[in-house]
Length: 89
Image (cartoon, rainbow, N blue to C red; front, side, top):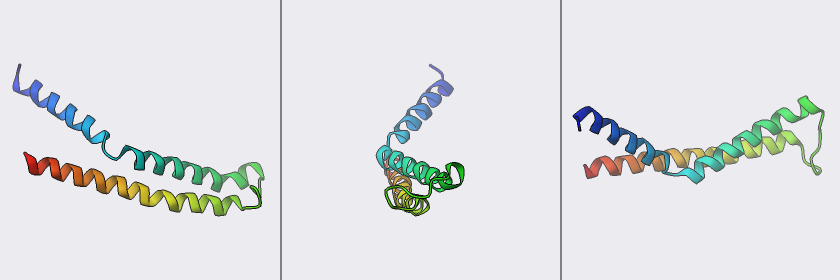
């Protein structure tokens, strides 16, 4: 096996390993961000001005605000994990 092939395999394994770190916070953050964006677009696109007595704009802003800590936490956890892996090598 050549050195280049071995290096490619190591990079692929590292990429796969990094994708598996902090999956849940990132996934929930992206879902909330998408939901928030859709709720922000909803009133102008469909003329909906109330969801169970709540403004869709307010719900969208709350969902977007709730997604930010999850996305930041996912990035921080990935960075911390990578630094730990590099410190072991």
